[in-house]
Image 1 (tube, rainbow, N blue to C red):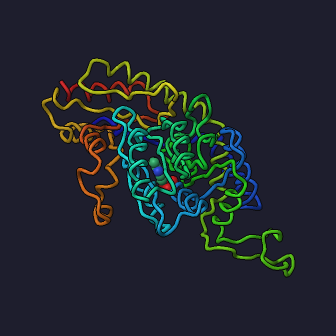
Image 2 (cartoon, rainbow, N blue to C red):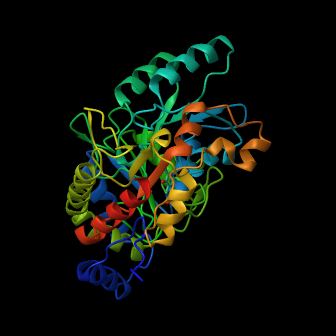
Image 3 (cartoon, rainbow, N blue to C red):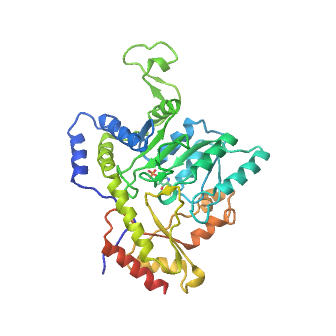
Length: 388
Ligand SMILES: *Cc1c(COP(=O)(O)O)cnc(C)c1O
């Protein structure tokens, strides 16, 4: 039996291990110098002013929404083609959540659809307070157009770039926040770089930064200038709002610092493998990932769409046969609005036809730094066998 090829996995080398061990022998295990170093490394790489490391991208999305004041009576819009966390963060804040259907070529939120829905929402007086574009697979959304709409309609933009560290949009690193208020990264092991669990919020706005660091630690400040009365002394702190313990440990951040040094190498290997998939999959009854000219993907995922009218097997058959053959294909994503929890909120099948059609055809092929060309050849051969 051939070994199982997962759809994604981390790569940890000796440098990563040494970096973590150094912290274990040091004075700080949490919120020490490694956190600062990791935040600085990501901010510098992306060209953003501020970075706040937290325990996950889910936590990052939550405090990013709170930082712009999302709450009861407000609405958040995102793509239905995402992990549930991009929508749940709105519900955590007591806001309503709605979705914008996808562009059938990029599989990202459709900006035409967004524009149309905003015009409608304005008439109904139910404009969103926050829009979360998700850079699916590592390909940026059309941020310039989204930023123009944000200005016109007065909403905040939080990029869910969980897939996209190392990607580029209009020549700028994703995370520069040139077209958004904040950008969120995930460092879960299947993503581009990892800290085990972890996330980060980037921003260029000082007031948002101050709120984010407070919300990460219980809403507490030790800065006398922010306090509502005279400090009682050097032990004194004040809780100014309701925050959380969303801190990342220094142990995790040390892994992050080391992984950041390897980011370009990770992304260039992924780009090479994606290009190789493109060539190997030519002329088959499927659609390879289409790339917008403004973008350079970080290639977190390689998603194909089956042309089902040209194949005798069903999507599910092909999927299950590949899995049985040890190929860890996956599906990104089950449309969020079809999850039972979201159906209870009133969403139903048929609400977002483009993403529902995509869901019937999409397959994520394995793609990660350590994937060998031999394994990739096995994946492609196995797929071809099932398609023809
Ligand atoms: C992985 C992921 C998240 C959640 O990341 P965690 O770090 O696991 O909380 C959110 N959004 C998207 C698009 C993701 O892929």
